[in-house]
Length: 241
Image (cartoon, rainbow, N blue to C red; front, side, top):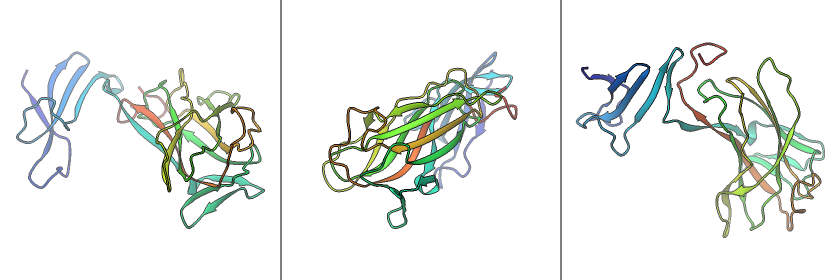
């Protein structure tokens, strides 16, 4: 077969080069596309875009999947804190969680709808961005339930924080703390995820080893969920194909 070259980026990455995509292989229900700069051969090169996938009735499904972020800034959260142990910080931007923040008495809440580009049924990775100023870690606690449209919302699952990406040494550190992954088997696009986020400093939930040893006020910046994508979107308004 003859090679077909498609322009896939506009504007080009620099004033003197054009990004192109070259279909290097087409078989029944299969397509291979290499992205490259003008003047490069159509082979995988460092920094090039390489897409391999399957053409279905619903369009291209990419087998070399990638991840994206669902982002929920603290400043856009639904904040419930009758005791004001959580408060918006308009100077440093975020939500300040006091040292005596308590499970169930204060919370941030979110409603998540899974995007059409999501690879249906694949695992989600929730985490929280916050500013760390001491060696101690807050008892971050997540409660969630996930359900398809045309299903009952079901029961809630409690998930205490279980890992931290960076190591604090001094000053103020932009930290990422990860919750356990969320299994999404059987879930489809536009399914709903209800989320409540707490700081359980005294371990009122019983989900932690114990209360925080030396709690201080911390600034929460954003709650995020990493999710896997395998397409540009869906072929139908309410289903993938």
